[in-house]
Image (spheres, rainbow, N blue to C red):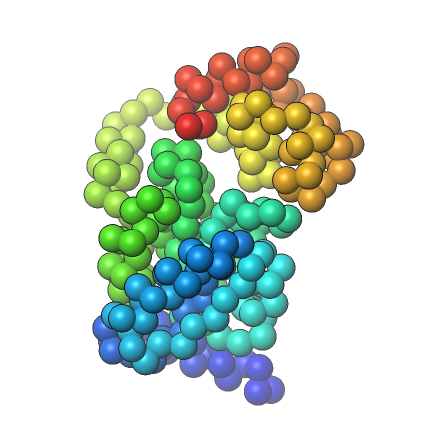
Amino acid sequence: MQKAEPVKEQGAIKHSVKPAVGAVRILIVDDHSIIRQGLKQLLADEFPKATFGEANNGNEALEQVMKQPWDVVLLDITMPGKGGLDVLKQIVGAQPNIAVLVLSMHPEDQYAVRVLKTGAAGYITKNTASEEVVGAVKKVLTGGRYVSSTLAENLAASLNAPLEEPRHEILSDREYQVMRLIALGKSVKEIGFDLSLSVKTISTYRTRIMEKMQLKTNADIIRYAVHQRLVD
């Protein structure tokens, strides 16, 4: 019975705490300790009463989320093992009152819309995180969503674009992740190692990607990804 109380309390925190001074609970998920510590320091200066938690990977993040309430989760979506998009989906499904801010090394046009559709409260790139993270946390604590001004303009412009979606939008999150890694020139074996999946599983994903997108070779995937600006 006591497990249900923190979840209810969490919802109240999200809507009533004043972000600049409130005793918020912030979980930072990244496989690099230096990034976790840097973000923690930035936020501690602005939220002196905050309680911080850390997780090194997706599994640790899910354990933390299930164990205790959090107001905000800063989630890196490019970590070894369980994919960040999968972790995001599970967090949102298990604790919908948590505001998840996705932190990524990928430009906004490669992942932002996908993670927002999955349920994230905002998207920050790592190269702008030091300037944006405090404002982003304040925004999502009030129940809002955080996107950069550039992404907001692009989303507004897309409202007038043709309704036909790009072919990669029909891919599942995992298929999209594998497709990008293929486009970056990685072999099936290397992708399997990065994602902690078997070569056979990656090969199956590759086949599905080819079928769904009507492509025949890895070179086709690379050309498509470059044209769509899905890789750096």
